[in-house]
Image 1: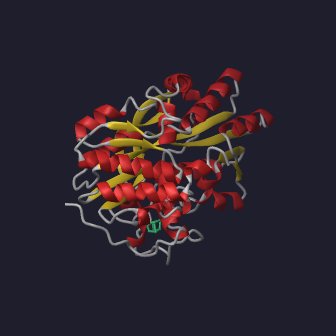
Image 2: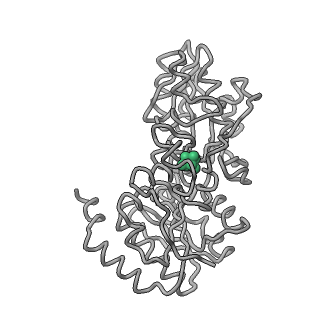
Length: 370
Ligand code: SF4
């Protein structure tokens, strides 16, 4: 367990929690952007180790959860077409669209396949030249390089039967939007280490300065998260609004230059709708003009989709940190992982699934931040 057990040591975790308690003098609200960190926090009981003054707000960093309903419905429409092999990561198959999910399309005869990499989808396209193979390209900056590589390879090989339904979203514009929203309570951010391993953190200092918020980059193991919180509280208590890298074993300021070059070639920044949140300007990627032939939205006629959101689901408020999942009236009753009403209960990174799976059935009493 080298490089893993070291970051799960219970004695060190207790020491870090004690350090956080010792430096905390008043209420603070900290958002962990990434759904992977939300799951780590709840799975390891980190929220229960913290002093009551430190509130963790779960952010919108779950790629499945923020994929807008109209993109899900477009995926359902394309997947139902004859002659199409629709490929996706497994989480997306159970996300409810307006009327059904991809599993239902599969049960109705659609050729829907789970893949573990977009490169698997390219291989399926090579092996099935008489079929149109579509990959559902979603997610943050973390998954984007592999998706970009898949499209790049398809173009280089002249694979005319491969295309991608692209719904990529970007973290820095989301932080900007959260801080600019009326009624926002977030005072600091834990930034996602895997996103920064690709993009570096050169985009964050202007955000920290503009909004007077510390941004601390952290990993996903319990000690990573606790150390990130410790540094964040330290910054808040001293009004030190800077970017701090608590994940230096993985993240550098500049990030992965070859990956960023590939992303810049294949994708172009665009406005994106985030499910439950709405359109955030310049918050996503679409395929660049040089790769437009590989855009599934252009290749298939899916423009006339009418979307219908669940009247019960409050995932938008969960994703913005306005409510905890257990404050949703449907949580654990009409909505469970077996009967999900929203993507936040489906996804392995969703906050509602984390609360359900790790037994947070009651709203935690927390200090109110004015
Ligand atoms: S518990 Fe279910 S219905 Fe409520 S916000 Fe979460 S996903 Fe939506």
